[in-house]
Image 1 (cartoon, rainbow, N blue to C red):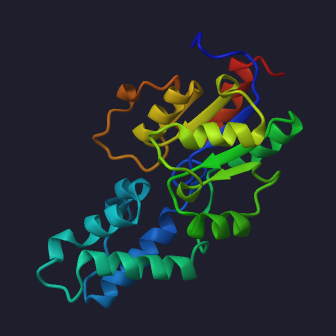
Image 2 (tube, rainbow, N blue to C red; image 1 turned 30 degrees about the vertical axis):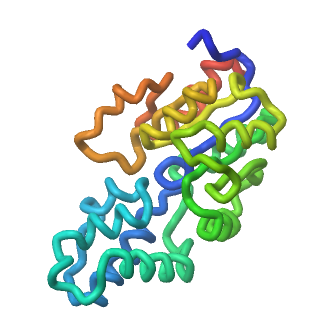
Length: 230
């Protein structure tokens, strides 16, 4: 951890599975799709590991076994899923337990926060607006704002520019190996969110993060301890 300073200038988050628990909305929409194809619902647990990999991965997880028996192909199903999601972006989505208190604490410390996500702006902006997290994010970086998505560090570096802070004084929290790779490549302190949408056979210890947390509630004391904030 010697590459990091002991000054905390900003905390950046991945979105789905790290900052916000969006899985219930995706699960509901996937089962609407399955109903339209006369298929029975799938369980929440069956869909969960694919949520962080986006719409295509969720559709493939939910429908690949039925391609020969349903009326739509996977591309059509993905389009339909995104139509439904745009109409119902934030029905059951909510911050993970501990996030609201963490953001309040960061505000008290005058430490800005932001989001760097591979989720398109079209879906990210209304989700963040409806959640109305306080204090508000100082940076919100989506694929439309950069040339290279994570695991490339471009989005994280852009967020640092927007927040006027040095990458080595920032933290990036994510629930996917690409998040940790992006944070490491940007020179940030990295925290693996083991509470996120992670496949049961995934070896988080191989992600090379500086820290790993099992609950979002662990992040505030971790940051306070690491940066000696009282």
